Length: 499
Image 1 (cartoon, rainbow, N blue to C red):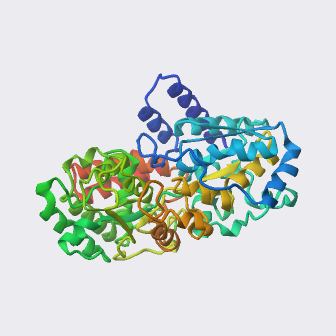
Image 2 (tube, rainbow, N blue to C red):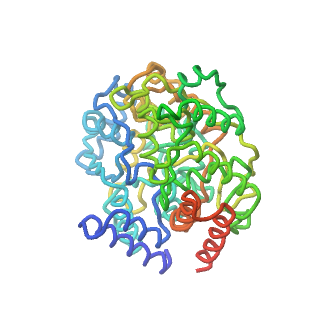
């Protein structure tokens, strides 16, 4: 940790304390963190889109061998208290609901799982890593990391190779190879090193109103041209009934807008950084992608320029659009009649094929173009943990095949393992209703072959919001052209990277 990094962490920790005390707003904190090169890409931050998770455990807990391990090996740490701080993600809510009666009852290890807004997660992580840099211990044993933080915190966790070398603490049947390798690489690794364990995976899929498609005799779009045609047809046929062709997350200055824009840039062969690490925004592919995005905007509710991902999800759940490419985490809500006007009417499908797709080898900072943009998170064992061995046992239990499968039956919507798609308990939820897994196979294909990932550089959180989303907001509100927007992003990115 160099001096600049140390001062930035101090600054963000202090701003998080001010936010907690009510001295600044969350949006002021978000901007302050961005100035320090640390941002928040979670799709839940500042929104209301966390899905409801059932409080009831749907099936029996771990098998006999795993229970013996928890009693005998975990029991060595009886009386230990470990701490994890996370935002209120669906898997976090589901798993923390199981842990007291299952994990703590068998091991005697008390788990303090504090669920707070993501700004406080970041502030507490900053405080811990600063203490560790001074040779001390942190307060948290397990970190919850937004994937946008990997480049900043990669050296603050105990890497998986070190943890797996502790054979005496290996959880039976944990099977790390069961995690989808694409998630290990993109949401839990940095610079080729596995720094955490995948935990959550919001990702773009296509969701469409089957009743409208059937009525208008529309085929499910397979290409970008098909998608635009379907959006236009729905809009022209249904606009008079208050149903728009599609919907977006176009709030100026918000990370959600950058998420949408990157999908259309990537799907036309565009990218953000060249392989040498230089920004490259003003090119024909990026222009074509943003032109396509603006054309879609003609078939959206004009209020879209004030919506982040929460507003987008609300609009579709209220039956105000016919088709959308967006976060698959919305799908269980759409199927829940208590929270949606379109329950049983929505189907999931693969995103349309890209017009062109740039190779990751031709991009910088581990950027991976793909129309199914992801926004995942991971759990990481703190290098400054007060109780690392007990924490590693808990981390394995919490992300084991059995616990993840049961969390998914409760609506956690976190299919991070191969077994997440084949477990009989998960397959039993492949039907209309709360906690549905009807969209899981589409999600799997998106992860395995279509997943797009933002650049992994420490400055990206700032660049994606304070530069990209600000300039894109001028474009979506008609204040500047597509080319002028890309030129402004290019110039500001170059300047900030120089500084």
